Image (tube, rainbow, N blue to C red; front, side):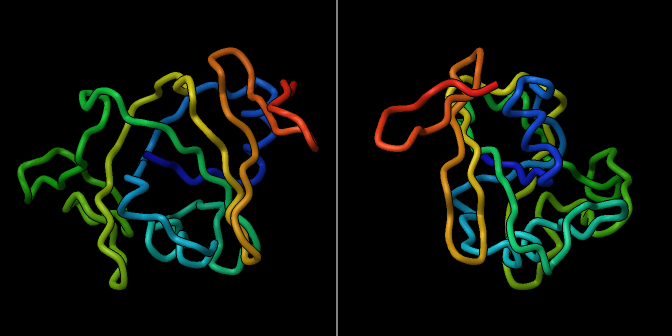
Length: 151
């Protein structure tokens, strides 16, 4: 699974001031895009109040292995048998509104960042691994060595 996070949230995650994941998330296998513009278009990141823009030079994502399906809910609109009523770009179909990409969309209530979660930077010039969460701290790669603790 993965979740796009705004650049202002990177530091709070890496320093332990933010330790939960919540909101809309997507399966990596269905949404492994290569540019911030693709992420923006495919994952409905143009919602009201969003900090994301199509012109962003970089976007950050948290990625983790989903280990229980009970935390992940498909957000369906009342007309489709659900009880979710939200403003567009929410579709209420269980998929994002993108015309180019069909990506399943799940909602997760606040859950602790899972052990093994990773943060990646997706930029116009490529993707960078930022850190991995070991259950207590985020471990970042050090030049020429294994991972080292941050924060």
